[in-house]
Image 1 (cartoon, helix red, strand yellow):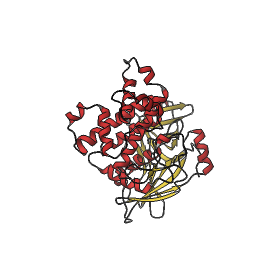
Image 2: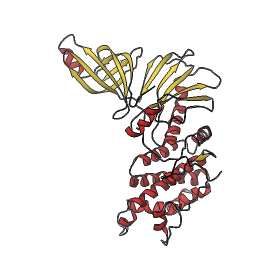
Image 3: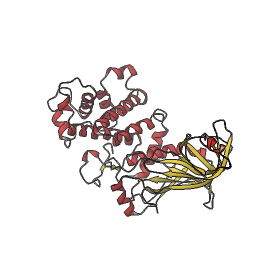
Image 4: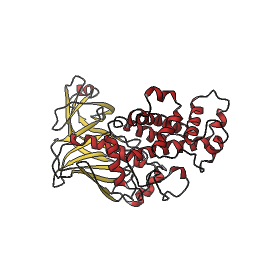
Length: 412
């Protein structure tokens, strides 16, 4: 069982080098994965001095080598404290560190943070891979997580091949990216598999991977996924097909990025970010996917018209929901604001173009909040549509209702 913000330490030996790659010394060290104030992996240790000249050398720590590795790893010295010995705290500049020999593995284990206990145990298959998730946290600890807005390792995952054959770490590069995007979209904030361990058939660790992943603290998001009513397997399998689509695969990371940041930022920033994401979505869908418009044709239309064409084609309603009273009131009787896409884009334009005399009235907090809800909902439904998802989802327009009230997707 894990506790909130619990750190993970890995012991290993390292060699320290200066900027000219001259050896300074060798010492046991601890690779520390901590969550506060943000998720970060650092290398900590102590070097005993034999003579006074060693002090100057320590201040020039620039590279390290991990035991059993020949590759130089560039580091940034966060802190060096010198007395009779030097204590150091180093931050690797490269994305990840591999400890141990990079041999073929029977399976890979990883951790996930801040997923609901309702997802207790799940197994799903993607292409040649089988992924198993198991809940590892105490339920009361998860309840406290919502109060602290911190980090809690909630699940351990296992990756193996369907046919049971061995594989290398590089074989799952794309799969790890996919899982990061999947669980981030499910959670509504960055949720990345981390601390990967290559395991043998007896469940012994062959190698460990330490990386500074994008992992967010817990935030309460009224996003689309409703545990346990939404169908995780159906979404994961469909989203993988979407992820593999040649038209979208180089842009899905960007779309999820804008979506995640729209959940984290203030409502005015969220409207701007979701508008940016929807512009990208419309460009991809209308000019490359369905080829309804040329690039020149797309540029001649207002963004809201492109949104309307895209969403309507996907079976996503573009009427302003009655629940959004401020947007409905604003749009009523206003020329050229006849649907939700127009209303959403209208508010966004007033936010980014300050010249309007009506800007103050049209960017009030309640109005912008409702526009944020629409923008996020449009992105969620588009991704679900392209993932061929036909299960239940939570309509975030119902933000103040019990989240258990899940609905069928509009095209089901």
